[in-house]
Image 1: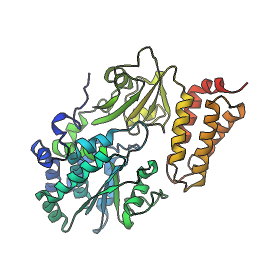
Image 2 (image 1 turned 135 degrees about the vertical axis):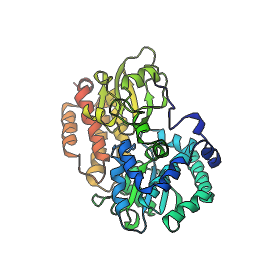
Image 3 (image 1 turned 30 degrees about the vertical axis):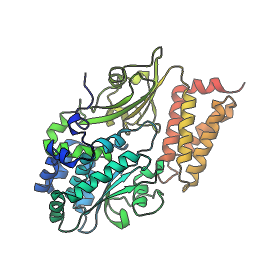
Image 4 (image 1 turned 90 degrees about the vertical axis):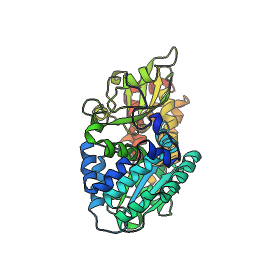
Length: 414
């Protein structure tokens, strides 16, 4: 059995805001290598197969390359620690317990792209994480490493901590940029993409906290080492936030490609007593559901996508038989409706309408036309917003109708 805490979270690097302790236990090795061979960093990340851990799974080297190729001038690296979706709790743990690993990763990205601004963007609702990160950033600014970085860049390097809005929508990358600029977290249409036009028009990288936390290990130990940590064709490890109807919920670091069966029934110790596995919301509640027939799926980006779902952030919210899927979906869609920024009318009104119909069905007041309305909304709404919020809401509703339509039917009046 693969035990948790293999690489990112192993006990000897949980040093909190103590930079000296981080460096004494092997920290800084990846950054030192990046400074020695800056042009080799992006190819090494490519060979490692590192992908974005915030949801989309986009290849990290492809996100960085345009920023590295951009002319000299202001460039930004942003660590996105907003994390506000139900069932996801990995980033706050990293920021609280190993912030220097995350900061070193962000500084490696700055070296690789010649970025002179590094921003740690943290959800203020996670007060301890914000406090630890502020202290950790202050220690880096005072360390000799910082002057070495500035000498490499040929000018000042800013390392700042910016509290997010604390809103769910504030984690979308263009909303992150808007907040860093001092505005409201309204998502923007793409293109242009942040790599071309980000903070104050400058090339910008927005990476998830977990993505950056992998970089010191990859640079310090090599791409082949990182690839060898995964199972099958998958590379590296992944943090899985396991919650719901399991005996041992928690945060597990396991090889990328670990099966859903192993995560739930070995690491999570199986279902609550007397319960049977029914389904799981993967990557948080904005993706399609996986059911009993999917327990064999390897939890990596490509394998989960082949099951018409997404790994997302690695959040796994387990639901047992006897728990109403309709109620769970109604709760999650209400969360999305409350989280909509209101900038796009189809999103604001669409999520509200989805939530209203779902709650009507859940409380036994639904009629046949309500099911038709849900199906129509799921067809009409995707793609109508500036970000993926409305798409996620429609996706989970459509998936629940497909797999558990009988539960909706049983709740209808008459």
